[in-house]
View (cartoon, rainbow, N blue to C red):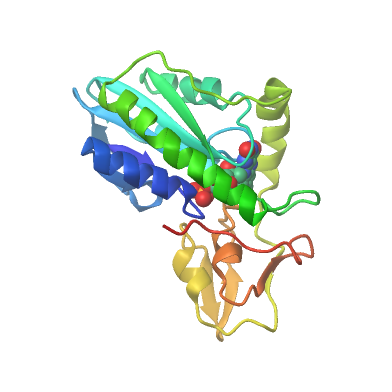
Length: 248
Ligand SMILES: Cc1cc2nc3c(=O)[nH]c(=O)nc-3n(C[C@H](O)[C@H](O)[C@H](O)COP(=O)(O)O)c2cc1C
């Protein structure tokens, strides 16, 4: 089984490539309404983007709320990040250990940046994004081979500077302040409803042909990046910053 989350498609691509190569079933975390999984003798993989130097809160909550029975033979994760992941490996390892799961290996892929909700955060240039995707494409067979061989003890991380501070001191503030209150649509909105359809958490309702955010956002920015007329903005912070989502 491969459980994954993705807002803008980077992690979905990695999850799907790994699923095809390993024969594992990819399961989109927001779709999972089961209250338990038996993973006796199976491999158990998680694929997710890095949000504020850790797994997204909804991924951690999923791990903690599910009932895991059996003993998986091999537990791994692959994350995608625009830049670096701080102490995401250690933090996810600890989250898994709280439900009795032992992390065997973790991998990272640098992929194009998607977070734009704060001043100073920008998209990669087209060239920069292309290079990251090419590097990830070249790395995929290596990760696939490791996962297929159930290789244990791989700690493939890109921690960046001050990883402890980022993951353990800055991230809690980020999680506390995640909010959709600043999202709005501009006059360019055609009412097509694509934002509502791509929102992985079904957090957008179309009211009188315009999107309304309903308060359980995870800040994945899928609505912003997929809008065909760039009519969704987050306050004024995203103005003029451009859009990106992964296209096969
Ligand atoms: C809310 C949010 C927080 C992010 N935080 C980080 C981060 O701490 N470090 C980093 O390198 N990239 C960060 N990013 C960038 C994403 O991890 C990266 O673009 C990822 O590949 C997006 O995956 P997706 O397309 O599957 O949603 C963040 C993106 C978002 C939306």
